[in-house]
Image (cartoon, rainbow, N blue to C red; front, side, top):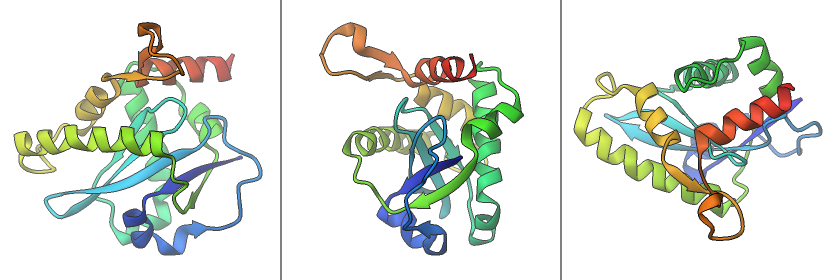
Length: 177
């Protein structure tokens, strides 16, 4: 199984060698993800969001030398974020849910891009509050992002509003049943 991560144009320029053109044959159990890059004190950080649940994971201070290990870095960050958010799961299950990671050019998913841009605006505010990347409690900030009410669904009913953390928990519980 492969988990496709569609990159923004800015991130694509940074990871050109990892970008694939051949579509994924066996889609990962959590579906596709979208990733974009942002900077804190001139250090590259990635905001990776699941398209189905809008659950976010932040990868910090990613350098060119880290790209060969990016799959493990992502899985570890995802696992620790799940634990921090109170979604208890074994690392083996994370490996099963994610599988191998493959990067693709942007898929122009405007809904997920809109969510990411909103999350980045929150992060910009928090960057000013904490000043340096080292002082930023990344897991806590990502937890805050995953606890912002989001709208998933077609209608404008209040019942369609939820949290990314709740959606990811339901999705994982459903898959692992």
